[in-house]
Amino acid sequence: MNLLVTGAAGFIGSAYVRMLLEGELSGAGVRGVTVLDKLTYAGSRENLDLSDRRLRFPGWSTEADPLDPNSPYAASKASSDLIALAYFRTHGLDVRVTRCSNNYGPWQFPEKVIPLFITRLLDGGRVPLYGDGLNVRDWLHVTDHCRAVELVRTGGRAGEVYNVDGGVELTNRELTGRLLAACGKGWDSVEFVPDRKGHDRRYALDGGKLRRELGYRPVTGFERGLAGTADWYRDNRAWWEPRRVAA
Image (cartoon, rainbow, N blue to C red; front, side, top):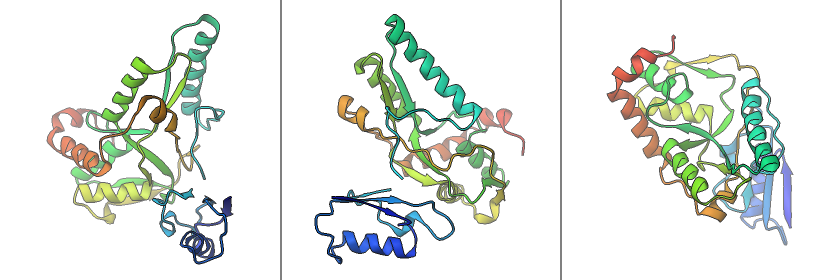
């Protein structure tokens, strides 16, 4: 039996889940627990051991889930997928679609969050953290993404969609803390700003299909990848300074 526990990232709910999984309650026949929590001021992912395979937190989007974009930017991406797949279904065009989580790495234009934060911190500036900083994103190194694209190109099935995840879910606040550490700065370099319009609370992809069918695994650990990215921007000012985003 699998249980759905609402509010389970809060004080009482997380205690119940921990006790259940540790065998301190009867829990007869419970094989897994799915947590549903809005993560308000009292709820925190850190209250739960998310490395426990019996525990699943709001779930992950699969390739079969309907697209439901909230912003015009996201809608433009969704429409490109649908147009490409329509050509496969109507005209038999060999189309394979990949949908990835947030990419990072060297050579990324400095308007994106990781290079934006790194370049501003390297210059002694402040960085903007939207809202409460608890929006969650999964992070994928660009080289792992490229490996996945090549796997799909050479071994994927025509007309199929493949999710590409990095397996590293962080709140924006957690990401900011790691970027501060990578650049040797403190939280006094962070400016909390109003949340942006259409800012989705969480992006999470289920990459199981790509792993099962094509054996994909990300190989760049996040700590190593982030440190290498910070080092690259530190060593390549001549590339990013002309492209910097105005403070």
